[in-house]
Amino acid sequence: MFDKIKQMMEMRQEAAKLQSMLEAERIEHTGAHGKIKVVMNGKNEIIELVINPDLMGDKSYLERLVKDTVNDAIKTVQKQMAKKMSQFM
Image (cartoon, rainbow, N blue to C red):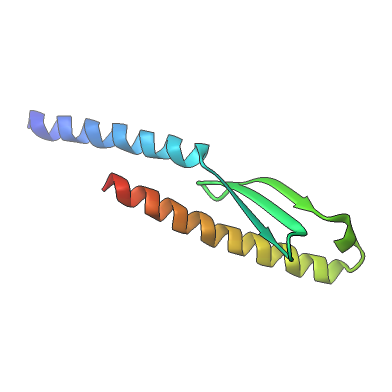
């Protein structure tokens, strides 16, 4: 019984470490030929979004580029986090 409690406590500690690691991770992704930059953390939260002023003219084009860049950034974050998490397993 005590072994199971100890094991649960260790799993909680590992989960807390992993969560902190994910939050601290910063991944930068650029799109639209370098005209849009997205920086995300390991929890798929956008930390920074930079858009080149040259793209401000066509609203629908800009929206599509931002959407595509953010979606690509999310995929990149997920791949990186899966790689890091596999090291813990």
